[in-house]
Image 1: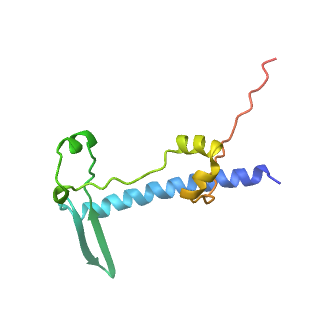
Image 2: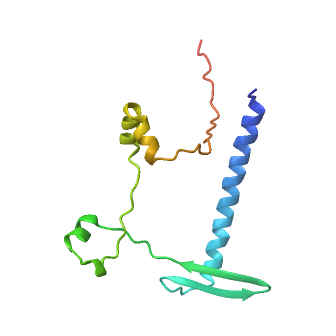
Length: 127
């Protein structure tokens, strides 16, 4: 049976988690500053007082699909893999009509339920 105590504990835990994350990120930023200047990409490590610290720099890359396809690269020059993905809207539509077809190509497993709790303020009657 649900009770408000669990909801209060959950909201407090979420608040503490957010505060801890903000603190961790601030410390992380200070540590990374000690490695400056960093290479644009790769891992650099230092040993300090019995701790091995590694900082990995990354570059974010995005693909302009139309421009890439317009290059018409031969097989040996292609540098992008196109991966199949499920179109959930179409899957659900086909699943309603032909569930046996979907079952042949899709494995379905339950995922972790998400939870959202919000404190609500009851409005006082203005009477």
